[in-house]
Image (cartoon, rainbow, N blue to C red; front, side, top):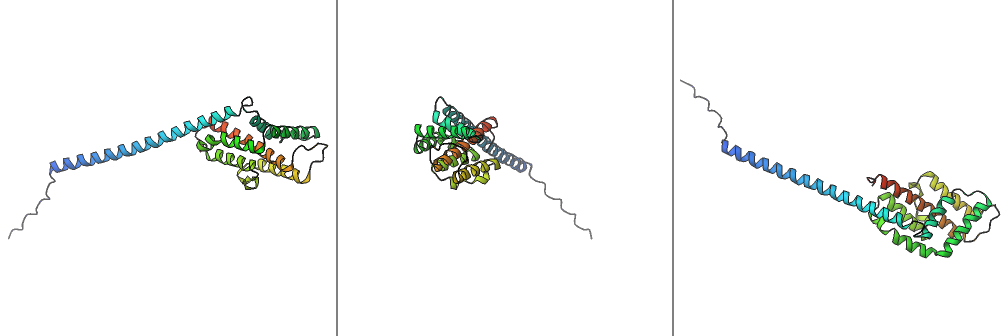
Length: 211
């Protein structure tokens, strides 16, 4: 008795395969276009954010030019000067500058001016820049104790600790105090933070990929 011949597997319909191939190709094309568009959109947004950041940094640096904003320019010089004082005449010069600054603008005036000037920088700035801006305003609001000094370089926290100690222990040189210890420490700290901010802005303008 002859065995039945095995049946051959049914061949796929070539028309159905063509349709399936076309559908899959279309689906992959749509997905590829979607992900490409998503990537391009994110890149465009990131690029626009960097442009806004650069514009806000440049506008702020222009504002603090000494000829346009003498009080803010003086704050910047105080931060640098306070780092180098050693003799009685240098300390007196710093003290006189601090007093002159507060005669031109009260602490409250400085706060509102800087708060206004820093708005765009804080809006478009990097995390590092926003932190320094916030710390400047904390110091001006006499909330210097809220600043986390551990996020700054060691020399910055040492600078702050040195001047905090000076206010408690006094200076042995023959200088005449012009303002209160509280305001002296506050302005010196703000001046130093302001110096850090300007350096950070300039660095990020040179390397705009900073976060």
